[in-house]
Amino acid sequence: MGGMIDIPTLSSGDSFSGYRAAPEGGAKAAIIVIQEIFGVNAGIRRKCDKWAEAGYLAIAPDLFWRLKPGVELDPDIPDQFQTALDLMGQFDQDQGVRDIEATIHAARAEIGGDSRAKAGCVGYCLGGRLAFMTAARTDIDASVGYYGVGIDGLLGEKHAIPHPVMLHIPTADHFVDSEAQAAMHAGLDDHPKVTLHDYEGLDHGFATEFGDRRDENGAQLADRRTMEFFAEHLA
Image 1 (tube, rainbow, N blue to C red):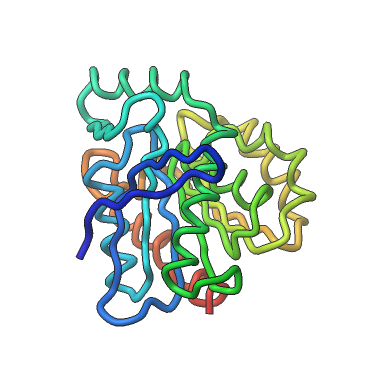
Image 2 (image 1 turned 90 degrees about the horizontal axis):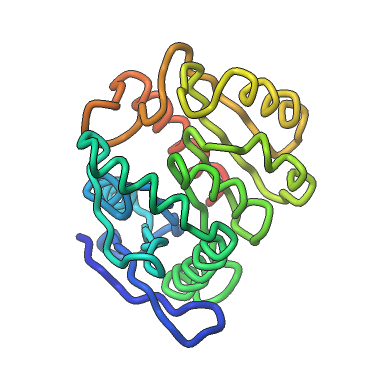
């Protein structure tokens, strides 16, 4: 169902890789799956495969390609977790959003050939933050962020969000403290395009496909909400 593809950058003439999964027959829309700090690993590829099973073209761009192409790390292995943190510290997030925008262009070209083809994005951890940035800086049709880090520091961009956004917020997230969560609610609860869902007692990474961080009930609830969100806004 899935495999690696090359994605042209917006302007430099370079290209970078991404994992692509597509349904048999035509896709009803495209979904860009935005990686955690652990790269396009088995969990992110499984996210893409599940979206393809649901009838969407799914592409996960390798956003760390300028630092180290092909990163695949396991968050349950301490030294690999540290490597991921080091990569995040070097990562240019503004450039990352431009690479996501390039992926949106590639996905729309495949499913419809023009900007009217619907595309959404869903991101996790760092990807949750980038999904919020993508919502404010591109013409993406719908965006979902899971446990996005530092969104409270991006609230100055909320006025630029033209299309629906959903954010999943675990209340016991040890990377996003209660003060940051309160700021997100204060800044976004009255935004006509943004919906926030809290997950009481859950921690960062609760919706991962594999590994120790997953909370089955929480993951299923959040993923069902995401599926319904995209069914509504990418139709």
